[in-house]
Length: 115
Image (cartoon, rainbow, N blue to C red; front, side):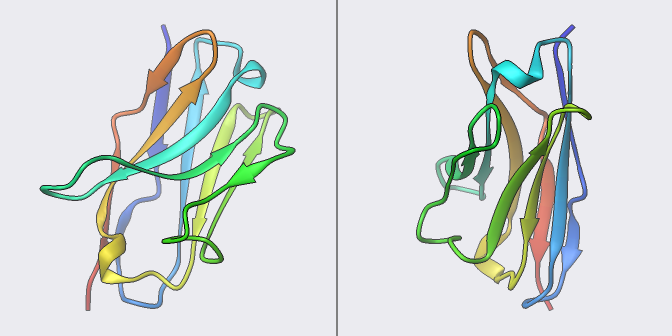
């Protein structure tokens, strides 16, 4: 069955860094664009990073541009989100999303930025 399993979340101080990973299985990963979304309490889910199926194009909203980097390793069926210069407003549950013929979501991983 299709699985997207996120890992790497946790508690980090403002200004710190984290790298999230999302391991995919059950579908042809290389045929899918991948996204990272986040959702903070009381807020709508927000797209924070996108990457095309072969990694040739990435996109970010202004809120994270220059601080977040999405990448993928198609040999490992894994997508990553490197986050630096983290701010308290980055606190949210981060979700991995696969977009292609299907539309799949991970279960999310909590990121908390606090001193």
